[in-house]
Image (cartoon, rainbow over all chains, first blue to last red; front, top):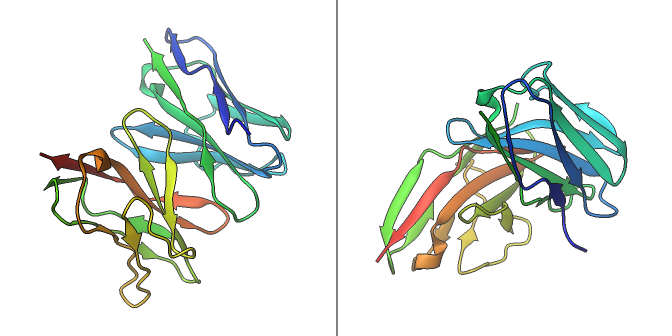
Length: 112
Length: 106
């Protein structure tokens, strides 16, 4: 398996633009997590899904952030409109039941 | 609520010196604890989990329920150990500590 796949790896956009980050979990995994990593706040859990259903979105910072998981092999995290303070590395991770959690390579987002 | 505390943001040691990265947790049930490592600009990788009781890359961690700790240790630090280390506690989701940057100097 190729592991958790994220795209794009780097994204530079201007304030106010819509940003969509994509994640393909490891095949067969039933949990998917979205994290944000910044120097100031460290690693924050934004939202996670179990069997494609959002379980806990309490970490989503504002209504500008939304996440979907239309099927077991794909998830998106959307920011609309984006702001400079959203600049961070966004990680996706997946897991099977209570087993080890595997992380993707991350998307480095810069909002100018 | 579960919580993980890593008191040191930065730990600097010399090559060959012992390393101890501290992690304390608060959790009412039976905890499952992990250490993840992140090398510069790379993804987080599992280093070890307490239930497996393995030694990975010379690192070990023992769960001490009395002190609610899961400190990460290595007897002799290597330059390639320089990285960010995260302690994490699992229930349905992983709760991460704020991380400790380990810097191994020559």
